Length: 316
Ligand SMILES: Nc1ncnc2c1ncn2[C@@H]1O[C@H](COP(=O)(O)OP(=O)(O)OP(=O)(O)O)[C@@H](O)[C@H]1O
Ligand SMILES: [Mg+2]
Image (cartoon, rainbow, N blue to C red; front, side, top):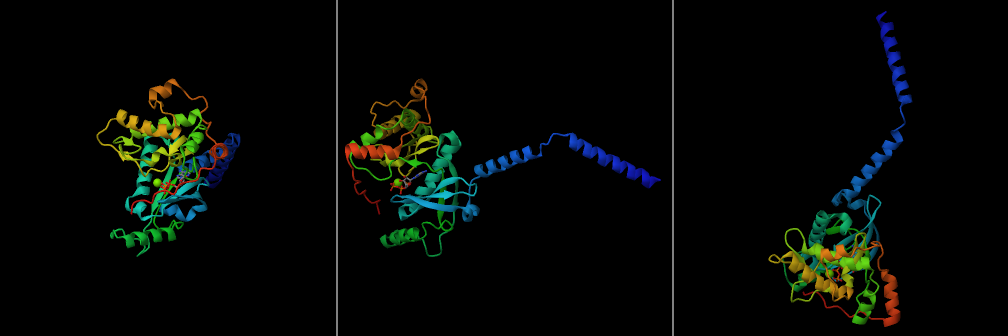
């Protein structure tokens, strides 16, 4: 009797469960989609580390400077990004790339990803035994280190790699000649020019102490367009080797100095870099940028091929 009663209750409960389920709207597919999106989003937000290295695919080499090499890579999330590595002893010894990562990460945390070059992560894997020796400061040791860095330049499992957003470089090779550069700069849009004001301000307001785009009284590479890229946020500074932290200067002093430097890039001597100016002159089309390839082509046609001058070697 008790058995029959229990069996009856069980059947009734089953019936109700099914009835309730059947009468409920089907949220399952929707919630799976939302959950999937959230997982995808958090994967994108998470900083990459050494555990991800084996799942990062090199697509192609993008460019080589004196100190660093850059690759286009495919991240585990499917996104395309840029990987940077040191290829010269100087880069490692002076911590140029680790410094670049630290600065770009601070800028991102301070101003938000939508206003800076995206920073995706880093991996600081050890170099093979006997590969790198930073203790000896001799010429032979420097040469050996640089040689080893070049041997392992595309092997992300060895040494330091930083992952950033991949932007569009403004100039792909070093150009000599003011005429060429002036012609190129004439193709900057209002949004691009305003981005240079933003760069000047972001560095002046850098967390901790203001940053200048160059040490006063010293020459800086940051007057060259080659140091900048067009990122999602607009024109941004991508080669951070020549920055100067000024401990005793004010925001206004750093901004004034930075403004003089970016004026050289855009060939606009009177450019006002203040926030007040940008607010008073809002940019109507923020997504309109220079077509760097086309600008380079046009300037080659009108001003003539301006061959790159051999650049001085970094100090040994
Ligand atoms: N975020 C980025 N997106 C796209 N391209 C980039 C990015 N960062 C750097 N590059 C390209 O990679 C090249 C090398 O990078 P970087 O300028 O940092 O190296 P470098 O060795 O310091 O160069 P240089 O000797 O010219 O100072 C640059 O010329 C630039 O065009
Ligand atoms: Mg450099």
